[in-house]
Image (cartoon, rainbow, N blue to C red; front, side, top):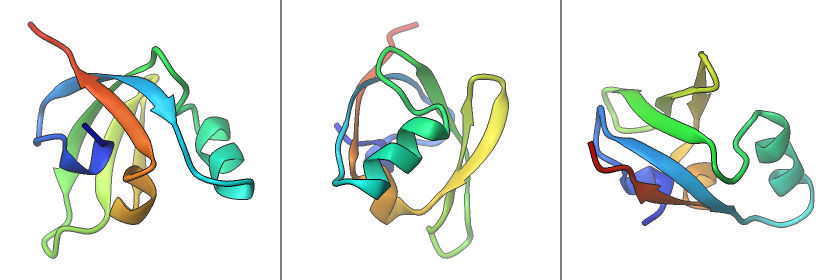
Length: 76
């Protein structure tokens, strides 16, 4: 599953970060690296962007960019 499809409030673990060149590096620099837990905290009224909780801080990300991040849902 990709990060843009993760339901609100659901925890997941990043399994892979895609994208090309500068986009991939920017995502990695923001802390979106494999084996990191991420949660969708909020979704904008029109659906884009989404607010994530990752590594103890909030991060807003466009859905277009979130499609490049593969996640695996964490079972509670």
